[in-house]
Amino acid sequence: MAVVLTLAEVDETTRRLIDGFQRDFPLVSRPFAEIAARIGAGEEDVLERLRALSARGAVSRVGAVVRPHAAGRSTLAAVAAPPDRIEDVAAIIDAYEGVNHNYERENRWNLWFVVTGRTQEDVDATLAGIKRETGLPVLDLPLEKSYHIDLGFALFDAPRDKPKARALRGEADALDKRLLGAIEKGLPLVPLPFAPVADALGMEEREVLSRLAAMVERGVISRFGVVVRHRAFGFTANAMTVWDIDDTAVDAVGEAFAREAGVTLCYRRPRREPAWRYNLFTMVHGKDRRSALDVVERLATQAGARARAHDVLFSLRCFKQRGAVFSGREAAE
View 1 (cartoon, rainbow, N blue to C red):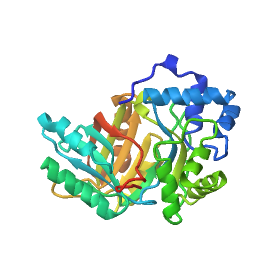
View 2 (tube, rainbow, N blue to C red):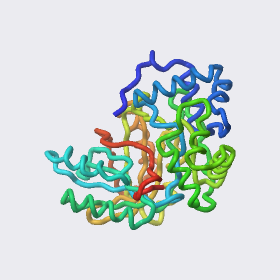
View 3 (tube, rainbow, N blue to C red):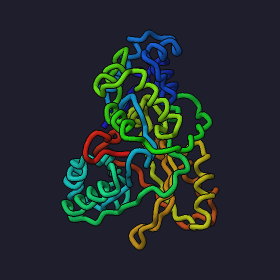
């Protein structure tokens, strides 16, 4: 779990680096030099800051965030682990290569994890393995529709207008997936980061840059840049709020929720009744519980009678958090 940085550890240059380059990372041969020029720093200073933030766990990686189902398949899943088994069950889940994130949340369904794979069969196999090894039912909630999925929001400046997501135009091809696999742990933090990637793939650097730019343009990569762990920057109240919305109104409500400044994720998933009644998910990242709940209360007022019920699942512990895997058998979206 990332530490929470103090204000003294996050100076103006670091703030400009983080808020300015969670997206729209320069896809050029010397990107860190270009970033340095834009924020009034030196290339090595930028690299040292990113290395230090990575070492502290505040930055996950510098690289691609891939759109759901653009290069594989995935689902959100949950189990209801008995309190005296939660660490053991979490360890079983974490051991699967296809599991990217695994959080304990405030709910009877208390372990929530993302499973990814090359195919739906890979995802199903991981879920079956977790069910078998834990002896627990698994709630499988694949994405049905996204209204807003973008965690690249400003951490220090005033909230900005949400960027409009590019329409997905074609999935990643085999070479795209090889490239995504080569950078799944992030770019090397060196002055020429794309050169070793190209060498490892037997490609020219210009082809790597061209393919990455094309995947951004086609919507396969939803953003390319500094991927942060929000808790490290003071956003410690991570509230997944689930809503039971009338099926005839869920798209309208989802689109309205997505426009709210405090909503960082908004998507529709299937009900699994009687175990799970909710069909709309929103994520709110707040610096404290009250600020997160204020956003939820605004959403509830906005939805009115269309929201028959909702529940707020604050995260308690993070057992696993990393980017999607593209290089293994269980390669992901």
